[in-house]
Image (cartoon, rainbow, N blue to C red; front, side):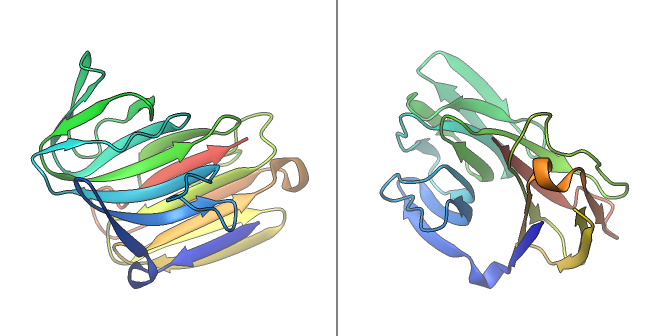
Amino acid sequence: MKVEVKRKDELSHNRWSGGVTTQLAIWPEGADYGARRFDWRISTAVVEDEKSVFTALPGIHRLLMILDGEIEVTHNGERTLAMKPLADVDEFEGGWETVSVGRCVDFNLMTVDGYRGAMSACTAGGGCAEIAPEGASEYWRGIYSLTDGLTVKCAAGGEEGEYKLDKGDFLLFSYSPAKEGTARVSLCSACGCVPAVCAEVWR
């Protein structure tokens, strides 16, 4: 297994048409989001404008969750979803015309063909065995901490580790199910709220 931890002050930030985006992880090594050369990308974004038009990303599949604030998202002028923090995941194509109304902080996952993904709010306690879907050859799980003092435990292939995260830190766990069998990731936090959000990618 492989675990990489990025602290809040190590993350890179870039402006987009409606605010600021923070890249948490991108694959493969050397991938370039600006040039649209990547297989998958996990990020957060601050939507500063009351009305924003999402960047067109043809050929990219997207998942979106709100971390703070509320927005209404409309795709191709037809399908509209009112999104509240940690309550909804919007799944759509990057080539669609997507417009949002409202200000928020969001959590994003982008994948190209050949990769699949999922997104969820994480709860503390317990573990998650067999976390990779059946048949997956490679698996990644990104955990973005929403609180200070979060402990993440990871285990796969006979290895295990324990990692401490504060608010805004990001952990990326990856392993090969075919070579390392099952894996376990668990969270422990003193806060009574949802301590983290998670993005999963596999192929």
